[in-house]
Length: 130
Image (cartoon, rainbow, N blue to C red; front, side, top):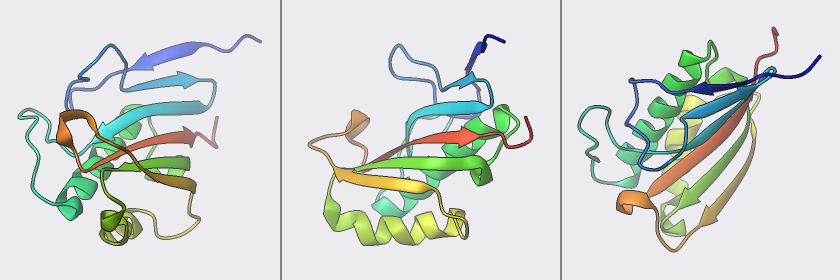
């Protein structure tokens, strides 16, 4: 049976700042585009890595919710940091959202992120009930 590609966009997160979808579902797997810590509606950022990481993970959760999933379905995270000096504080917030059965993960320092964000995270999630 051929797999169907479904594009997911939700008003519960900031609008995409480029030509991409919030997420794409193929079969029981959802690929979520990188999200930053801006607030829906205002696209404003709170200061600091803690606040931006928290809002980034909330945004990711809202996208997954639009697919009928949650952060519990995440199997892979890729984290992009403007500075590795923020790694420890980012991890503290990350641990609030992922407390057991941790997804696979990679973290990188990059030269610059969109909108001068301090953190961007993309995820892959799997619907285990499908």
